[in-house]
Length: 217
Image 1 (cartoon, helix red, strand yellow):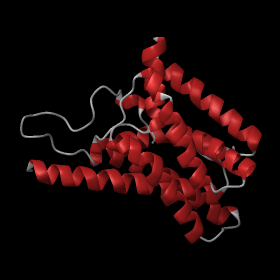
Image 2 (cartoon, rainbow, N blue to C red):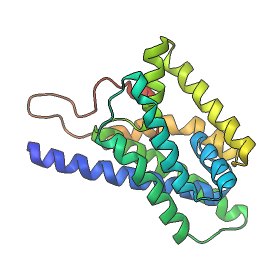
Image 3 (cartoon, helix red, strand yellow):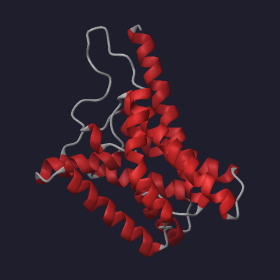
């Protein structure tokens, strides 16, 4: 595969993955059975402010990106794109998808949202244009504090889940299911969407970011 073809494929994967992430997050909202950790915070803030959850996602992503400055993190194209594309795709999907009622529809919607979220994660990470702002926050805290990435991720996500729940975000069985399944799903889709290495043998996935820490935008 030529360098130009690889770049084109990576860009398609990046934006397809980010858009699909927004779509999958919207499906989780519609299912109403529990959101991913940052989704709980976004929904809680949306309830508090009265603005759409997609706009809240954009605002939170931008605010988190500002926290990269004192941690000397360098954003990539994927990082900046993440802030806007996910939120816009989420609001567009919520406007297009009709409300569902009854567990017979909500459970399949939840499962579809989680699987698509894993696929989206594999797409945009394998593109290798940098982590999402929230993942960069975790790896930045790891570097600054010397604590493990697992500890930093747990601390950050517990904080955002509790805060979001207090503000009115949806916490439920879907949150737990997401937590236990997104890692394995992301790994499967990372292998599926891996871009062939460059002719010089260099890898596509951005260096310096522990892959195990990057599970969402």
